[in-house]
Image (cartoon, rainbow, N blue to C red; front, side, top):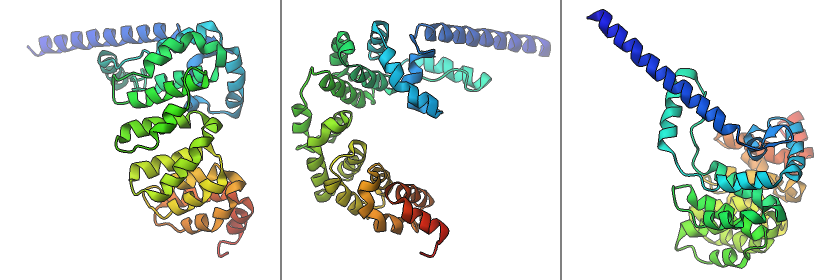
Length: 301
């Protein structure tokens, strides 16, 4: 009986192993359909987390210039992604036996990256406008709000929508999810979102809603415009422990334009939270490298 049980167990393991191998082969086969741009799969250029070297980062601009109609079609198809429970289950089994052999599908990540990429491609992305419009109405999983925002930003950048709709939504925080969607869409416009800076700087200074303050802090740092308005309210935000780290990161993105925040940042170097102290050091090096060097050489200063 024991031998029969062992034999039965071995067969089960063999079947499971075969299923995992087949899943991996299908996964690799699926990935080969990705367009190759400048010697790399297009997803390499979309995923900032995988650009580990300065050489790769410098190649992003060249890669975008090389993206053709096939890339646009692939990006448009990526906008149609939906959660796949079967694939995630197979990935879990594969990873159990072989480590990180197969990535679980991460809700929203590639859809957002695809929308951002299409917005960066300009006129070449116009054939993908129908897919972007559909993505701007997506509601298939909890991440869809960010997908809608990224798709809206792409449509604005392609001249297919106006910025006014998102701007108008900033005045109403009664529906925080819709408000955050508008902020994220505007954030995706970069410097083109400059008209929203006074509004969000004012909201950061006047509201007690944590979600609004948090998103306003992140927006001001991401856009990096109007330091005369942004830096003072970000300095004030340092007084709120729950958004202090985000405020430090946002201040650092202004570089020397935020130098008048030096003393407030220096004060964070003695924060009880070690992570805050590290971020404060980084922010100080960005906004006032001379003071940072002085403190490094003379900690008592």
